[in-house]
Image 1 (cartoon, rainbow, N blue to C red):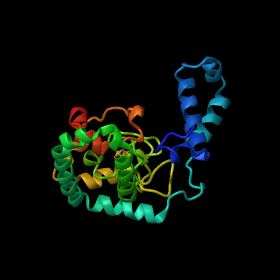
Image 2 (image 1 turned 30 degrees about the vertical axis):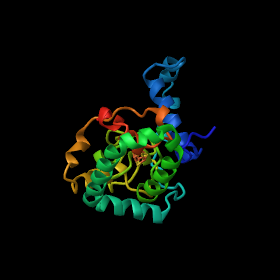
Image 3 (image 1 turned 90 degrees about the vertical axis):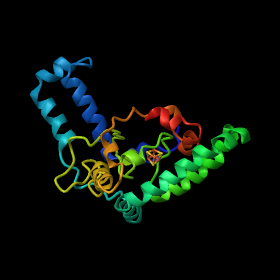
Length: 218
Ligand code: SF4
């Protein structure tokens, strides 16, 4: 089954297999899986797993669309401008909330989500998580992180600032920090974000703003 907005994340490529191996290796090392103690006794097994899991992925195929990468980078470079635009949109959505409620939020969900997917998909490669954090992440969508990290980078960012899993793209959190430095309220990047609520994936975060739910999550 494909979860809306997660098609890219569901692609079974070498990188994802490596993440799975890494997870299993981590749990084995912590003794949280049956057989973990036996595995730890076998240094060769652990070393082999560690080599597969942690060897740099420099030989993998390029996965990034250059045009999409350029547009995402443009959005980060113009994070200050986009912040001001978003503030206007947010005020308009909040003001329109009562009217939208009279029309029916449920009725509006699909068409508004479709427009949001188109606009934010173009500007940010939005994955429609339904709980947008762009204004706290320098206009760099954290859902583009292959590990979907919402609170800063993993420990694997390369020395050139590129992603550990996708070596052809900059780490979304390096971009997020750069974008936040261009924003008036860029300090929000230090806010701890709640874990992704998977019930909201595919839903419009614009309508969530209109309902006032966005403010409650802040
Ligand atoms: S954080 Fe914002 S831009 Fe990123 S997937 Fe969620 S709604 Fe889309």
